[in-house]
Image (cartoon, rainbow, N blue to C red):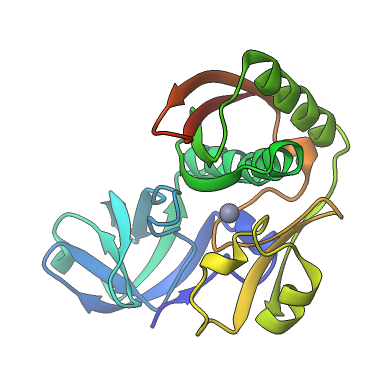
Length: 238
Ligand SMILES: [Zn+2]
């Protein structure tokens, strides 16, 4: 198994470089004993970057998970020595962190205002989207969501990451608001992202330390995706 360096607390999400050992050389990948690279999943793209060593380096094109180990896809994995330094493409990863924290706030605001749940989401570095149901948005409703989110961002609330038992979480949160009811019952310990007293949500993604880092929300598009499902696309201005 690979130790995941961004799981334990919010500060660990800011790890840009790390030392690691190679535990497996595959056909088009290597497996590291520890990594700060995010593996694609949960609507957040993989991190990209480089593995570097004395006299060489390899581009990490994507990181995928297969049954636990994280596969760092590189060209010529046999050329990668046993000890490397991992270096993330930080601008891209930091954009994903801002987008992901924004997504939690937007999802919370839409649930609180209209009781519509988040049924899908996809983050990119330059724009992101969230699918909501059941809902039919009007322009006024989305203007209200945008204004409310920007007001919340302006509070600069700290973002925290912790591990909480499912029993405790079930007592303390609205299971539908946190999408807790969608997680397999077998998962008893959850990594939870807490944003002040506004939001508590199980999540394995990467986040910023404070809402002051998110930027300003601009909702750019709304698409009908089904009978009562709508897709909202957004960007973040600095
Ligand atoms: Zn999340």
